[in-house]
Image (cartoon, rainbow, N blue to C red):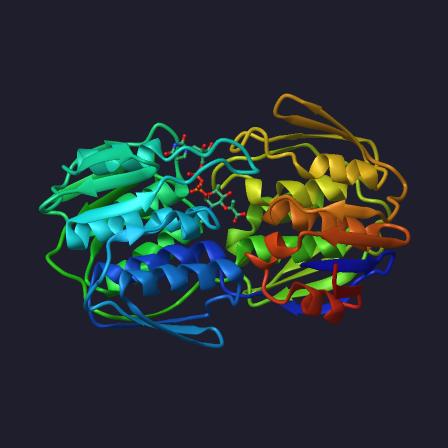
Length: 419
Ligand code: EPU
């Protein structure tokens, strides 16, 4: 198993290019099995979760080929409608094949995702929504079973806006008979990207990106090409890398409009940020130590929970006390104990972090527990005095393409070694 070794204290400088969004690529790849024909998906990040999704689609019978950041999929026939436990346990997003399998092939058996390091993550709304669309859904022996001759459009209200839930229902409803309205839908840019791809394939969807999505079902979808949107969380992570090292960096090939909540908070810390069409330039060199800011994670367009650990690292070296309130995954705080090992002064009170910034963190061996927690620890390591070793980096590899190379390109002293 690899570890990442960082010698901290270098101010990052230069330009970094953002990869395609993992959380957009995953539903888009899953949705390819909704129809026949060839789908060529470009700007797909080369990360382990994408490889896992490719494996899953292959097990189901789709023909999947990947060359660099382009994935070509043909799903004219399917051999299996079962997503096995062995894959689902390594990637919860496997649940995204549930809606497409059921809608196109009339049945699906998907392992029920189990516990997760970032808190309880039920899928009750996925199941309730599919039931509303007329499916028979039950859980047995650890598997979700769903069956329906043809789904029928329905009015679905989500108790909380769920990202993959909205995606599953939007995909399923695309092939249902009649009209589906999803209310209190998630509004994340990744939902819009999926809707754009489905629309190119012949689906009829309006309102993606708002809290009410209307889908008029069609008989079948055709193949299409699509370019995945840039990863807003990867972009945000590099912006924080610039801020925490008091550097001056440009994040290129990103969508600044998807980064507004992150840019707003970084500006509040004192960083100077300039936005262009596809780039964000951050200069935190002149402003000295960042100011502490309060943050509340919220569904889009609120501040993303997937940037909470990275901001906790930044606040650990900020001036004054900051409060971070996590409202999406209320116990997503596994990074806190590890940041404390680096000298951070953080108190957990319910779903809140009370962080009193210190002058300098000190490097230490730390353990990654999930994808974004790993990113938070890497950022802390970049700012810390001395050497930080981040263990269990397989979490990081699930969602960040070439992170050491990209950080090295900005001047960081960072290496991957066998642990
Ligand atoms: N929820 C329910 N019932 C459901 C579904 C969700 O109560 O049936 C609750 C969850 O417990 C949570 C809230 O709704 O409190 C939102 O969860 P959501 O369903 O939106 O999360 P998700 O779809 O499982 C996606 C991303 C996550 C990201 C969240 C929130 C993908 C593949 N995953 O997860 O990404 O944190 O939305 O934005 O899109 C990551 O990339 O590191 C990551 C964890």
